[in-house]
Image 1 (cartoon, rainbow, N blue to C red):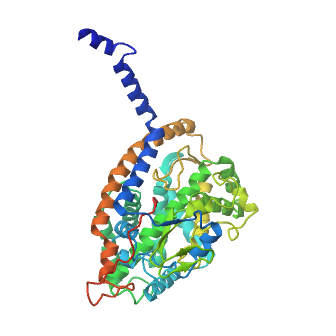
Image 2: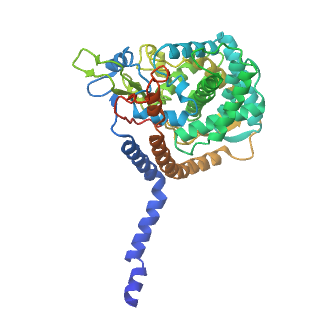
Image 3: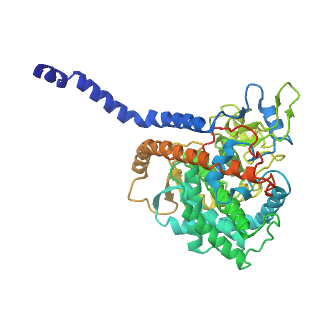
Length: 488
């Protein structure tokens, strides 16, 4: 027995080999464990939510068919009849039943969409100036030193919290309200990415603030009469402007700025030609092509669709439109970040739908977003040189860590190169811990959403326009549950 123990402990023995293997697995885990956990999470989601819908483009529906199918008048259902809707209603609650993204087609959606466009309206000069001023205030307040390490998404959230507060209320945003909006938006997007559980108390505090402003008559916009009471109107404002708008603009800016940080030549040219804006427009197009904000947009067919080439989908089909796959078609080297490609193609002619398809619930910020993103980016580039070595994925769960080096200051004491090495190592190891959190939190929330069935139970009690059913026995849940890969 003693001899066996000595042999096992000796160099080259079974225990040493097992220990070496375990050490090698641990040290290499940043390179393989996150991918394995993401794959496992996908299988868990599919097991909880049932079979997938129809993902396009596919072998039968190519890029041209993708656009025709997306724009088809019958591909216009949004929530009713898809198990996937239960997930998004859960993550975007409270008030998902009046959120513009979730409303079914009809008078209520049309009224809400008109109101959103009116709130987002204004001249190009006015909107750009407002965005630049909000960005300047936040940058000067949040990044005072000559060298800073930030998370770009977190840095941008206060900018857009102020901006959309000014659009909704036509007055400056107090600091405590900005913090409230930012906290709510972070909670929504972090739960969507499964990096933390929901904190409903934060969301409730913002709802109370909006109810107070409505009760005092301090919302200078005519809100849709189709929203029945102040609670519905507060939830509409919260979901559209202070959840989705703040989150999506912050994510879009993080992608744009991180791409600039990782391509120094592109950044130098964009900064040098900021007065013109044309090249920065190419950079923005390329960032939205390479890193679209949506992985999947789902629609439910409200009637049979026949594309005329033998491809047909019956009513109730859940169609999952894969933005990254579509954006990768029609260009050479789609994985390469190359703004110069936009010298030779236009967004209209390319397979490029960062704001959706105009004929089917396109993003209401399709005009505003490019204007204000260029203005805010100009403020960033005018102040800082950006550098970052971290992973850049479409879902951006790391929130885009970046080093900001202030222009026109003496060289900082800390060497930026050393910070970049540390940032890269930290990002690798954070990815391991984050993937474990996403697996645990994601599994919990998907199961909880499946248990609550917010969308399914709502449509069991209401028709597609939100009117209560005469009888609660209506089926309201037509169509089978569906799951699509939707990590945002």
